[in-house]
Length: 135
Image: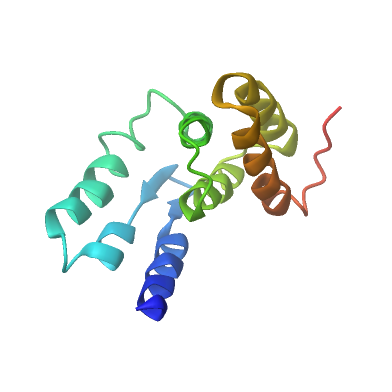
């Protein structure tokens, strides 16, 4: 059971992919992890949430979608593997080390200090190789 959960978690992380030339997200994590068990949920995850209805709606840039999503996950205290995945995706969407530090600092006052500490712990790992230094 633990192996299946680990495999599903890895599949979710690996399936977050962006097509940078088109600036669109193509998601398969729902079908990979839950396709047989909950096909409707998988479809909604992959085709609606990460399809044209939300993430690929051009009103916000992928950078801004990531900033919003990271903020909400942190505010809910969800600093789990999905939070790490969204940090990694946000980095790919251009969120800099300075921006994530500023976001987490501001969020600390609204989402709670312990949530921000947890977010910083993961963000430091994600941006460990980044040369963008906060001023």
